[in-house]
Structure formats: structure tokens, C-alpha cells
Amino acid sequence: MIRPAVIVITGASSGLGTALAAAYARPGVTLGLQGRDAQRLATVASACIAKGAVVKTAIMDVRNKDGMRKLIQDFDKTHPIDLLIANAGISAGTLGTMGESEQQVRDIFAVNVDGVFNSVLPAIPLMQLRKRGQIAIISSLAGIRGLPSCPAYSASKNAVRAMGEGLRGTLKDNGIEVTVVCPGYIKTPMTDVNNFPMPLLMSAEKAAEVIVKGLAKNRSRVAFPLALYLPLLLISYLPLWITDPFFAALPRKTAMEKK
Image 1 (tube, one colour):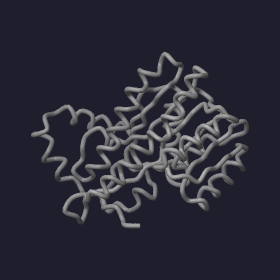
Image 2: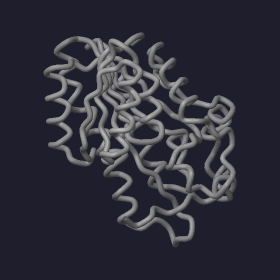
Image 3: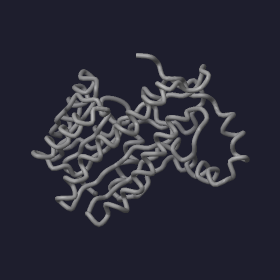
Image 4: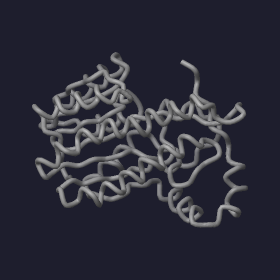
């Protein structure tokens, strides 16, 4: 969709979500911004309003299935959604642990997988009725191949990538565009805790620019940076016995902090 006028972004209170909100904010645009931190979300909203956008905010946990359904349906009644970006997510790995705990795995899947479903699934029938709309699912390059440094995160991003790619074909005849976004390392609070080199680290603002351009062109997959994506894609086609030692030697991602 070239110029969506009504855009819903989950996880808008920090990182890539904040950058996407800013990238889309302009006169004539209405933004529905979801997040869990009221103060940060209010700051993001103020910045977008200053750029001329109309902004509606919602403090909601994407794990809340019924709450997200009501949020999407109520917002759509007055502001029919052109574009929904399922961006909310968390990350964690295995650094300093004996492997991921069961609770960490379940927490990651609850946000990164169920949270995406809770955001996207309520919007689909609404868009089907109008025979138009666009859905963007934020996956990751980590979803291209399972990584020993962050198995649950990798698996969660692989799951939503496959879901999005399947939905694209399913919903095409309904006039709904679906794009899966697979970024590499983006400088956000999520990556600020990483204590290892992150090749081709990109600012959230630059990443948002790439995503906006890719969505405007209705690309099936927006994966970047290419210098990281293409080698990873090629490696993913090699036999596991060849690539396992390489991936096992990669730096470990920090385990999730207890809250």
C-alpha cells in the first residue's frame, strides 16, 4: 500500500515501533499506537502529533487475546485500518545459563507468537469485508535459521515468518497485502544489552525507512541488510552437519532478565 492513512503499530513505545510511528506520522494520517509503558507511549504520541498526525494510544499487553481483539475492533469502527504492523516482541538468549529456562521460552512465545496472532487475526476479517488492507509482521533474520545463541527467539521469529508468508497467498484474493519483515541488528533497547559485535548494526530510524519503502512496494519479504541476509540465506540451505559448528561458535545472547 503506497500511502496508508490509518496505521496501527504494536510495540510503539520504544525501539523500532517508535521509529515506525515517526516515519509514518504526517498530516492526514491517523496512528493507533499500542504499548505497555504509558509514559513512553505518550512521548511517542506527542512527537507524532507535532508532525501533523492524529494519534490514538492504547495501553495493552499483546498477550491479552480478548483485550487486543476489542482494541482492534473498536479502533476499526471509527478508523478503518489500512495497515497493521505487528511489531511488539521480546528477545533473550542463553548467555550465562545452562540453556533457556522453560519460563523464558514460554514468555518469548507468548509475546512474539501469540502476541502477533492476537494483533493480526482480529484485523483480517475486518479487512476482508472491505476487500483491502495491509498487514506487516516483524520477524527477524534470526528466523531464517535456528540459532543456538537464542533458540526460542529464533523459533518464534521463524513461526511468524512462516505464518505471514502463508497468509500472503491466502489473503491475496481478498485484496489484502501481507509482508514479512526480517531485519538484522537494529540499535534499540533490545540490542543495547548485547555484549558482542553486531555486524552492520543499523539505527531504528534507518530500519524504519527501509521497511516503509518495502511495504509501499508490497514486497513479500523485506529482509535487510542484504550483506547479512544473503549469506545467511545461502548458509541455511547447506546441510546442518556443515553449519552446526559455525552457529554453535557464535556469541551468546543475554538471557532474559527477571522482572
